[in-house]
Image (cartoon, rainbow, N blue to C red; front, side, top):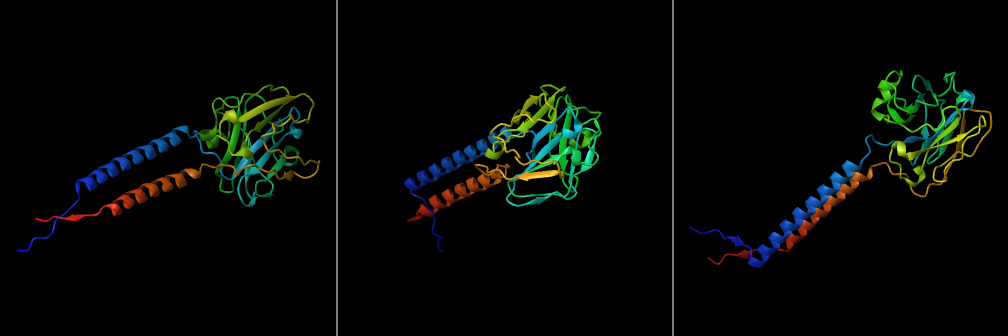
Length: 267
């Protein structure tokens, strides 16, 4: 009976296989460690990847209040059917198209249904929902109140404690820093607060935060286009990095395997 040839690797090749196995294990552990580090470092809630709130002006005079939205995508976004919510109120935003990497300043005086008493300077929130009712972004100052009418919708994205209100009796400006540099972590620490005594005067804005420069008393929206130094990061890089890492491991294994030359057993 004919014997089938037995293919064996030389000792040198067996050593290469063992080295390859150790290398594969090491790469796998490094990849797993990196994945765990990213997951641990990730914020409790996912940052918005479309529209973010960048500024909120909480004024003594409710009609002077305003907030600002930033389109952080590569294309225009039209806010048809979108809503803005405070702790106890939700109202429809005017149909507005925000251009790519641009800002839209929404004036409370032009929004139907804005709270008569304005935002609570000590303890309140501001959030936005898209046309499907999905929470897109929010911020809150003070401690979230379970008695808020909109608490149930936003409870998973509220901070406890929230941003510290510097002076609830004065005009307060809450603004998100470093959004244009893509360093947003979606935490209360991303926000700074300044105070001004004159009614309707917004506090100065940090140079790192994009800010609307337009003005005027007519129309609910003022838009401007900042020039971010880098495109804002949305967290979407993680799956890409993971895929690239896995591809690198597979290609390395295939490369070493192809380099092995099997030897025919002479017996």
